[in-house]
Image 1 (tube, rainbow, N blue to C red):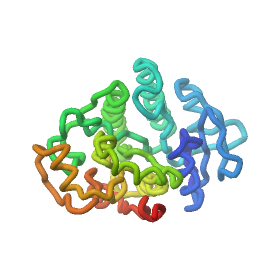
Image 2: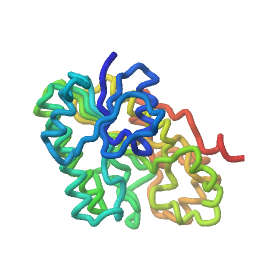
Image 3: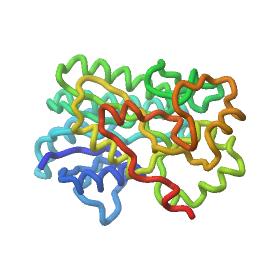
Length: 286
């Protein structure tokens, strides 16, 4: 059984990732400052990711708990702008990610998957995107300190992968993570479509986010790669053509935007990871 350390495994996406990986045969070690739910599979260790020594021990083995780690999933972070002062967000997130990359390299771990962010696409799109559907082809456009930190993390990943030929470091640019209980409020978005224009009306079901993580752990890719991870549809029932005409009338349409399909392109993830969303908010709201 391969062992994977999941940082932030007690968080919203982390809980889904821990469950999914355990269900698919991984020995999961959750590394988090917060304890997991009582019924969570795997084990839990409290680790301060801003302390390189603690991270290095977590990725090599802690006392008699375990020894040796095959892969790392790094999800722990202050998850959005504005939750903490900008400097604190940058200092926590970038330093923690550096420590995970560095400790993984020292431990000889050759597969790291971590949570990058859809914010690198230019969210909240006060400056419209260059085209839709948006994808990974244009340069990152951070518009907050949180997002700038993610840009720094992707640049770090590029160089850590270069320093360790044959290693794989995958950044998953997750959209807005949702659990099933969140879907009850989705119909209210129709009353104010502008409230969700900030990410082109996108979302990611936590279970599909977990699927993307699992596929990134085994996909036939090397070096650094970044992927947009969203669900196959938008949060709206209003067709994309109408939303774009009202909110982004001058943006170039460069692909299929018919119906309510996602405007956050997941074609690269489909092609290279084999990712295919299995859930939709529409399955839970009548």
